[in-house]
Image (cartoon, rainbow, N blue to C red; front, side, top):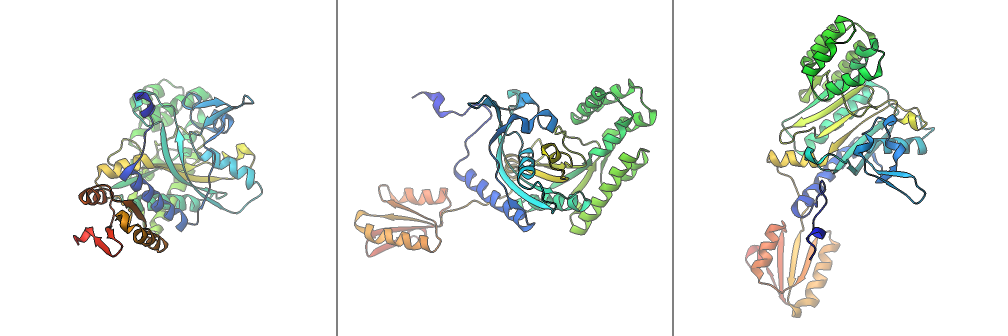
Length: 403
């Protein structure tokens, strides 16, 4: 046998057995939260035109996308992000709709990361988008739902950190050179604060702005950090960002979720489409955020419809890794019953299995060709609740009870 045929390419993997069952149950839990908030499911294509995700839309760089061509020569990509796909759908199908729209999605995304990053190239995302709501009330709803997703998944020790893109935008209003602004962004995104200080000192900008950048690494903590961040700035854009964060925090207090919140004014994202509130959820057991989101008021407008929006995505693979390492018990869909039958008992066993299935029971039906001990071990491995053995048409034994 050609061994290469049974292996997956680098960066992707098979999901099977108990892990697959746990993943399906976790998806059900998260979809239940989306439904409780009134979010409708939406499904977008796995691949789209390259222009949906190009640099003007603020998504990932071209070199990180999997690109290919159709028969007409159009450049297509495996989606690296689902939010732009939802934005395209909204612009196409809801172009005249002004009411708030609520969508939830589940799908795989594909990033052509460098091999040394040791990250999966295909991951599953579950997320939600609130369309047409420009208010802090919308921000509060989305963040509250994100927190409920974490809690319903089973996380207890986690933190959702909130930033505000406009705080940074207000600071760089005095800088005309776009390349300088982008270099500042990169240094902050990479948390290279020593490099940030050195670079800022070389710039011809007001000393007051330099002082803020020099303290960027310290602008994180509980709600009191907003007072410090507010006192450091005088421009209206940054101050407005702080006011918005205070409104969001007040809403989360009303939701009763403020204990999970912290703030980081130095938080930025590689997705350039974020325009306001931005947030990430962190927990132990994974090196990256398990949930990321933010406000993107201009993205859908690039597809032809003005629609301020906010949303988030849960990285299911990272969430499951964290839960496993924290030894959080994850439920798995289980089979209710295993029915084993001898040839002579077939006419009794098959109708019995059909009857249980009509009652909503999941039944595995197998003609006996192994020792009963092997079937009992199989039931234990696969979390099967009951094992019935039809030896004859009149003789049924419940092996889980030793009968």
